[in-house]
Length: 207
Image (cartoon, rainbow, N blue to C red; front, side, top):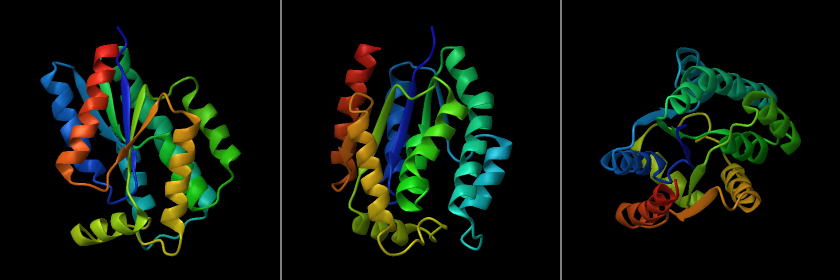
């Protein structure tokens, strides 16, 4: 039986990484064979591109950025995601193509339809079975992220960049309400994880 594909999305500072770890623990405790990965990254090439894309000293044209993201994604799908799903493992991925709509289209202004064309070309029929979008106000997200690490190239963006990213994520959630579940991430870790577990429990029962 083919595995299931779950992605985790959110603004920087939404607590996404913490909740992804907790989601992985929840799924493993249910005996589900799990592959945990991330974007950009997951492969040797993807990790090299990740270092370039997140480098705060590296300036990139927004369309160059989008193309590099999808180049890393194509390799990720080929090397990691599709083989794991084919052998029956579930895949839990930190970001996927929704992030390209949010950051490259929403944040950086790449036309929405160009991201859609890249998505169709690179992914074909592949899309997540479930996406958990952890929604946080841009102000709180930036405050949280700045308190725990040195900002990367995206985290250093100023003005209303992060508000545009959030708006794009919410647009995606409206376009795919059955796949994308919006989780209020403004509260405590325990409150957010409790809401997430309810969604995962329902998804597991239906799988």
